[in-house]
Length: 99
Image 1 (tube, rainbow, N blue to C red):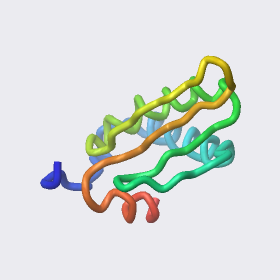
Image 2 (image 1 turned 90 degrees about the vertical axis):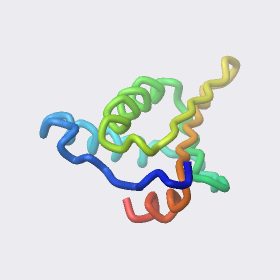
Image 3 (image 1 turned 45 degrees about the vertical axis):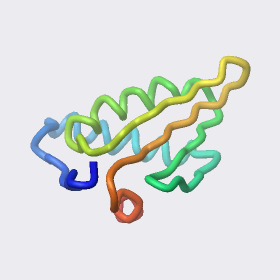
Image 4 (image 1 turned 120 degrees about the vertical axis):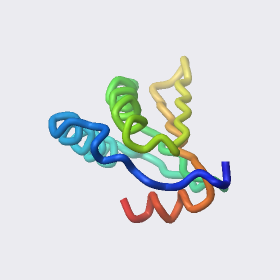
């Protein structure tokens, strides 16, 4: 995975999809309750299970233009917590800091 380049394909999404992705990203950023640094990325916790649909929609869009991301969702059945682990190849943390 170390030879994977951190290059987004901005033409992978239509203008409408790109706008929706940015809208979802703003919503998820505002709904972030906790952010944990990982060796190869970050984990984000969202309080409400209602965030699950928005996280899933954002992942579906984002993976089209940024295939180097690795997404992992963790949803605990006994709480409303939704965790998104966003990881990737070397350099991913500095890439995410610039987004």
